[in-house]
Image (cartoon, rainbow, N blue to C red; front, side, top):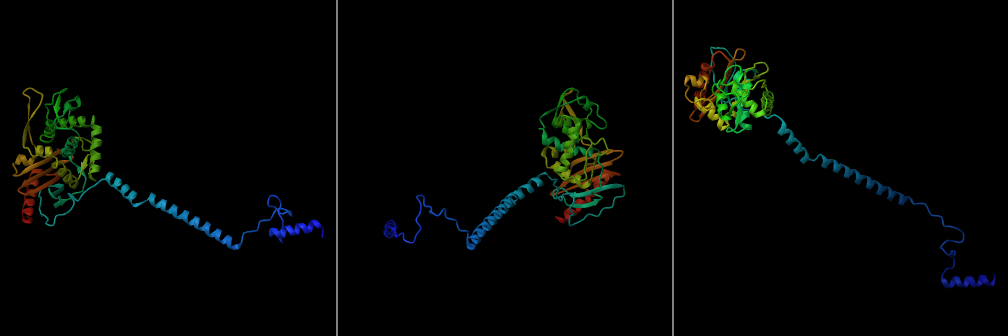
Length: 351
């Protein structure tokens, strides 16, 4: 062994490096770079488990986010919006009362309904959901829309279309002048003025066609499934129809408006009008008022050749309030009296 080797071995013993391979200046072995060892099977299993756990966490997160997107709160809100826009209809004018009225009518009647005005329970019926022309009973919807959209103290312009009306009317409306909405409502519901219907429709919607569109939208919103309008007055029969059950609900809504209830409950009225004398005398052509029926308080009648006699009438005695709907009647006044009398007897026995 050379002297240099002996010295080197002694140095390594002192440093505790015997049996180790000396490294270069940068930690490398003089024999070249150290080769990395491969991963053990255990390490691979651990790595796979971690990756699987990450995938599961991602899946759970995605499911959670999806469930939040379609959570019950969102679904309830969507259902609420859908319910708010969908037509709603109660059992009013449809549900049968526990005690039924049995009435025989000798004169012809296409469709009819006797009902409790307060509850809507049906006491007697004949084809109550058959759509038929309704003549001036149409004006119930016209009046209801007017009070919902304009104040009664507002004014309506009397246009050429108003004075060139067809059928029944006030007949004294002054061209080019303004008339109060309240006066026109009395003229609409008492003498069944078609001229008043035109003036009110133009006041609310600008044109008759836009007002008729509003009438049909209101009917859909109320759930009046067998009702459609083509006129604001009822003078046109084609495409203008309803059924007894729908008209009972419409009458109930009208009577819920204090101004309209007061109007249809009047046998006559004196209203201001910008004509000579400044007053307009109006009389209710409801057959119950003509006959002097006790307790009569509404609502609207009508007639055309196609529709025949039509009537929606109500009467109140004490706490009992009964209504009747007659479509294409042989004698709406006589049939209304007969049915209302039977209704008061039945409701009186129930009370």
